[in-house]
Length: 491
Image (tube, rainbow, N blue to C red; front, side, top):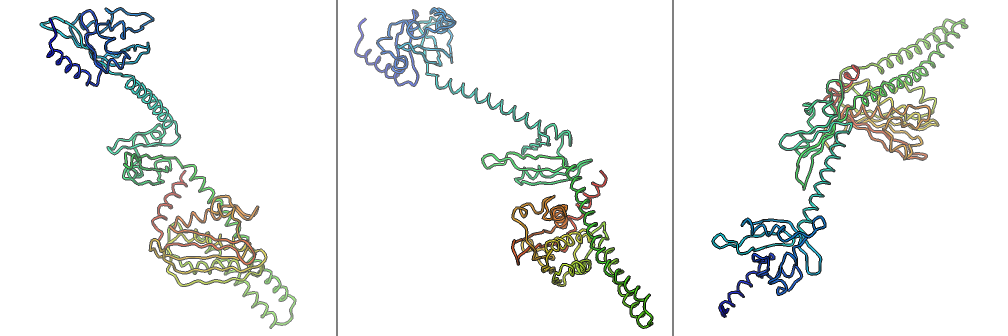
């Protein structure tokens, strides 16, 4: 039967349709010979279309090496379509090019049948090399992610801190140390994790039964969005107990230094009394005896005043009280009269009227005494000591308070020491100091919701200035610290 021009036109149209497809397409008859092939299929396999038409495509392009053998056409999965009259979809296989190289494809085969008789097969395929490579890369990435997740989980479980990881839906994951410290739940007393979920980083230290726990929390951000919160809890019980022990040792050292100052202050009037009694014993004049006795009585009154001031200085209150800091400073400075004279020091005291401050009087005395004593120790060869007190409002918070200034004209503090001045065991006094005074003083001032600052300049005519600012009402912090000290004493 001759092929008419119309038939040729339709064949060209069908070929154009096949060539426009984005997949390789070929057709097979029952003997496996190629009946048609589109442009993309020929290009992918490296053949011209004429080289494929009428040829056994299994032998040309679909043979593959499995176990080193060349399977026959009957073993090819495409030929099962002929036998079972069922389509084959998404088959991963290998196709060989004309030059002998191969590439991976994803292949489908559908039977062409008329009245139940299979006349041929249409095969479609696409180059799957890139896709399969992506899948392989994805598997590797997933495997690495799983490995890293497992390593991270192992690290979290091994950390000697309680780890809490929360998600916005309220789920909380904990590690072994967290469960050991507090069970499976986040302690109700700690609000840091809830704050982290709200976008707030915070640090809080609270007491739970038998322990002190410091919790540091921060939000987890991804792409600028809060996706959770993490809190790290650390048992700081031993650290707090050690700090308290250091503070107590500094108190004992301060008492010893105070006792030394008192001994010097009392020694001078006692020597005067001893000399006066000797003069009374040797005198024959009643008038002289009366005069000597009067002077001795005045010296005894001085001893009595020093004793009363000492008792007041060391008096400790368990609860905050309203204290006139100007009166406290006047009382304290009387204990240094002798040292000021011996060292030829000039004292300038300016105590402006200011409202009483709610504080623990004994602890504030300890701070002031430490600053004055340090200033005196810095001026072993004379100088000027300035002590000033006046009312001052904290311009950042608007809170009313008082400001104490203690300034000396000593040798100043080196920059190396200044960097660590308020840390424990930092001292400028070599073997004479404990290195705890300023550290303890800073803790006391901060407990009263105040702050302590210092400036120093080395060289003659310069020196060091310490300033302490205290609010008129520091009771909230004092109540918390009082409970802390009471719990520490129970350990």
